[in-house]
Amino acid sequence: FVDDDLNLENLDLSTSSGNINLGKVEAESNIGATSGNIYVEKLEGDSHNVGATSGNINIEEEEGDICLGTTSGNVFVKNMDGTSHCIGATSGDITLKDVNGDLEIGTTSGHINIDKLNGDNHNLSCTSGDISIGEGSGDFDITTTSGSVILGEISGSNHEIRTTSGDIDIKKGKGNFVTDTNSGDIHKGHIED
Image (cartoon, rainbow, N blue to C red; front, side, top):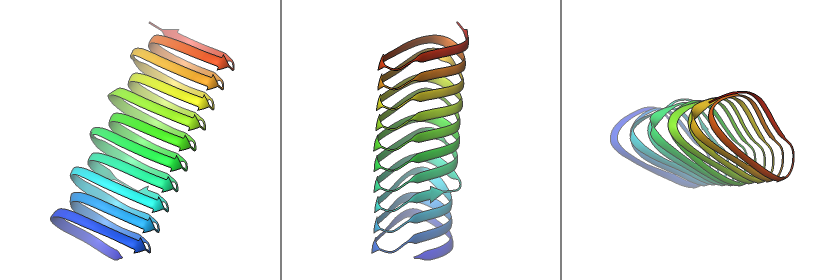
């Protein structure tokens, strides 16, 4: 399915086998693909649900609260702006650029890469994979079972960073950091209370 621009109150769109390619969508959206990729140039609306069973999700710009899910595929989203966002992936990497709003991510097998994240509360968990954040504001709760956590510049009040088997590397931070690893090294750069 391909369309350039859609301006609707609600959009419910799904496909069993094939890709979905959309331009600008102004609507509360439910978009799903069983076997195929989803590409959206811009999503605007109060809330969005986007899911792919076997395929990638790529959104260039998003306004509103969004929930994304994929069973086997990567998620790539730029310019997310809303109050809260949730992402779940079973097998695949999650890459986010310029996120505004609270963020909750859970992935079983795959890396989480975020270049910039601004909000109040963030909960990120990964069973097998690394979590990397370039710059972030808000309180962070980050957990990995088998993987490292790499944080560039983080500011907020309270942060909990835990790994079972993996390193924790905090380059620069502001706030109270509680860090714990069973098997790995902890490196803290410049930390301000």
